[in-house]
Image (cartoon, rainbow, N blue to C red; front, side, top):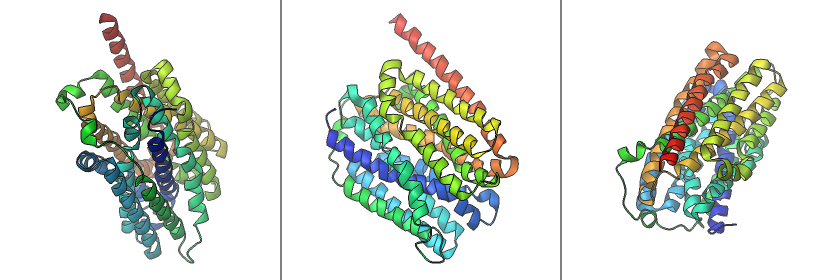
Length: 393
């Protein structure tokens, strides 16, 4: 399919394991947070701290990889995942909300390091296959759609008297497997990949395409995770059972990652900006479904739309980002991109529990509309500007 197939496949499997850890945490985090938290409005704090951990880790991850290589960075991330899973299991055994929150902060650090898998896949293949490599790595999440929630359900009663502690111990085993896989990845040193002249960061950030990439990815991710975080609480609040939550989250995650098998081809045919804008429209479609009702099928269909919309916005944004920097600038730009995305995601996730607790499910979803409208308008204006520049050349 393309050069560097072995490395890309290892990254795909590593991505599947990491996302299985994260999906399980998101599936259980708010429900268990509600059980452990002294105030119900803090129920989504573990998930918010997972996202904060992702944002915090993005900059040191880039620094570590620049000086010691991608593999060292990825191994460090998997170690954070192992530590976070074990700490969450201990927190449940001791009924400690603070420990549970810190455990999710470490799990977020794992994701912060692992988010560079998709960029490593680009480096491992030919430029003309970059969008496809990104898509395949992101598609590793299809496995996570089933492994993550099922792992949470299977481990529920493994430890007598401590609900779901076994789930987090099983989650720790996934990080151990990821460590073994990542140790087999062979990539060129980042210093080699960064050979050449680098422009000042200010000059790089002035590019319209780069600003569109960061804005689109950040808004798509922020809206998706804010809604996904509150969904288990909303379903329980509408009288549905915890057994109903698992298939909704599973099919949401399928919606997030299954389109990745063809998103790269769509980007090559229609352009990254057009695919991003399609993603924003699909995310608005989720809001429309939410307004129609709060039965199981409303949650299921709405969350699938939410997943597909995220996929188009995020992969489109990532593909566009790779066109805006030179090899010598890659880690610098990638770090700014990851920090900006997960900084906004952290803010929206921190607000999810409060919005749901104070104003309800409908208002939480309506809060996403202004963000999506700004993203649609901004990317449309930037796309028009880029087309005018192309015509003038």
